Image 1 (cartoon, rainbow, N blue to C red):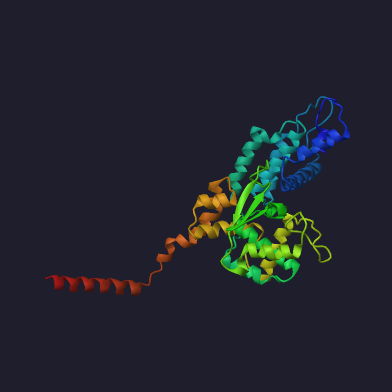
Image 2 (image 1 turned 90 degrees about the vertical axis):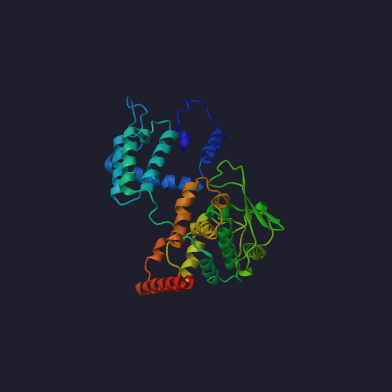
Length: 355
């Protein structure tokens, strides 16, 4: 536990003190962030063990609290890149190493000039664009996903509601998993979702997402949600529950379950491309952009803090095929000549009439 390694100058702490402090420290990052940090830190520890290097720097008399050697971090990052991993993985390694050092009041080696320069150079070598972004699913593909679901079964009713609500609300998988019945507020014109915490709201101030009724009953997210809640039954707690022995025990699903739901039906429907839970959110943004919805409205619905990322990742790729001028390059030569000659004839006849 990080609090155990923090230098608290001999201050006597009760077990309850330690538990409360640890809970507060844990809450500074989302569960998914803690998971990826832990995984990245374990990779760094394994690399250090293989090289005979202390992950947190040398300890003992005279060593001080300097942390890991920045040169070792540089070597690790360079090897990570050489292994074919992405710039995002390099960044994650730096974040995890720096986090564990700061939590122990050690000097952060990733903040040194050497590490920053290596990191910047690797960005230029590797590039920073996502290598395999999630494929954004559109209305037609949503229909194919739904066609692969037995919506009369409890599991199928839940999965259909997950897919339709995720697409309609541009929701993250964690937001779907964390929804409770208390977060649902039916309105005459649709449904309001109150997100108590999300990636762009780490302080849990709360965000509201509107869900409009669908034009068709089969793809209406509100109808699908009502159908699932009829299977779920009464009782406060999570909206989307896991299944045990065929019955929902009112235990929440995880974000990984949302991903597996989308992947399972995508495979059953024969859809190609990298389809994940994020495909629902990306699909909302791209579909709305193609329909002419303003970027400000899309950003508000998706709760994007960075408009530039929204445009680069979702809007421009969606509009590129629609707006490409290459559609006008393959003009049939005979048709072009015919149109030109007909135009000249029309001009000559018009000239004769005028004279």
